[in-house]
Length: 103
Image 1 (tube, rainbow, N blue to C red):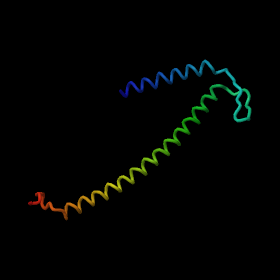
Image 2 (image 1 turned 30 degrees about the horizontal axis):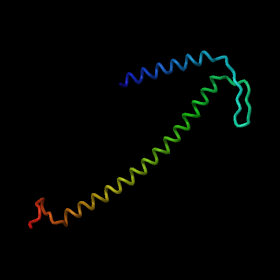
Image 3 (image 1 turned 30 degrees about the vertical axis):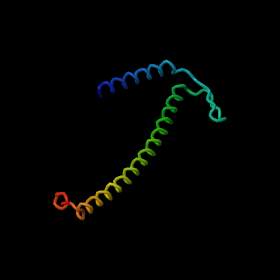
Image 4 (image 1 turned 60 degrees about the vertical axis):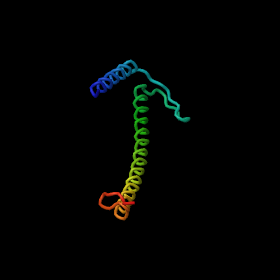
C-alpha cells in the first residue's frame, strides 16, 4: 500500500512538472486586492499559491493539534480521578478480597 502511495505521488509530480514546462514562457497580470502586478511568470504564481496554501494548512493543523492535546489532557485527568474513585470504592465497599457480600 505504501508503494502504491509513493507511485501516486511520483506520477502526480511528473504531471505537475509537465504542466509547468508547458507554461514556462507564460506571463500573467495579477490584481491582488487593488494592487496590480504586471508580467508575473505563471509558474511563479503556481508556486506562491502552493506555498501560501501549505502554510495556511499547517497553521490550521497546528491549531487542531493543540485542541486535541488539550482534550487529551482533560480526559487523562478525568480518567485518573475515576480510577482513584474506583480504588476507594473497592477498599470500602461490601466486596472484600474479591468475594460477594453475604445476604
